[in-house]
Length: 297
Image 1 (cartoon, one colour):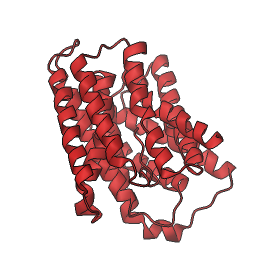
Image 2: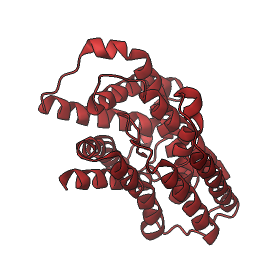
Image 3: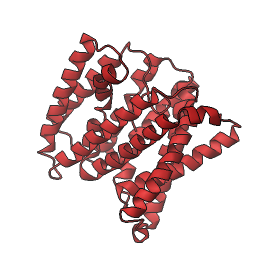
Image 4: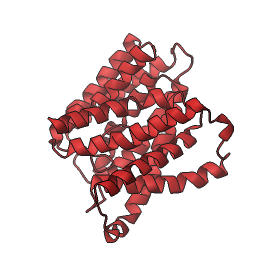
């Protein structure tokens, strides 16, 4: 029961990321940098506190995959945070949750897995759901949202790449993989941010600092800690079902907290997209993510 509660809390935390990212007065790349830094430092404290160790021989063996995964993680966060800024939380979350569909589509080519008839049909239904969501993007109450949905889809592409690449990482546990990837993310993002406009300290207000600390510690640190703690005691099927708390949390926050309206067309598209990915993954075993287990940011 404790493991299930931990996993549920991690999904709620991941689903709430949009409400923080949307209102942080920094660029998406700066948010990604600070999230990686704060989350990495938090997990480092957890790693040392729990007296865990990592074999550098195993790290060296997985160096290429860790580097590529970290680059994908950076792209994932930058485009996801930009999606939140350009469109509604619901649109960004739904377009981002197209990632499992992309994983299903590319698994036969990358992982040499068979694409069953059921999964092929589910991909088609998910594409139909995305079509309805895209149509809603032209009629948003806050303007033209297709750009934000596009950013969400690019983020989904990076997340799918992250998921597939992590399949090739061996002999490292989830917490170690995440800590290493966050560390590499900071190493990559810092020069990128500095050489593309630098850090705008004038924009960093008291509210920005508070929101960024909450996002970094809650999402980058506590969220991943609960995720790994909960996943240890859950079966693949339970993880698959409970993972849908993430996008549903985003939709509820979008409607009830932020007050963003959802059209019937968008709701229909959401049901098609989320329903098809759930059916496509049901019975498919484990869901993979940063440690090889699938979850949404």
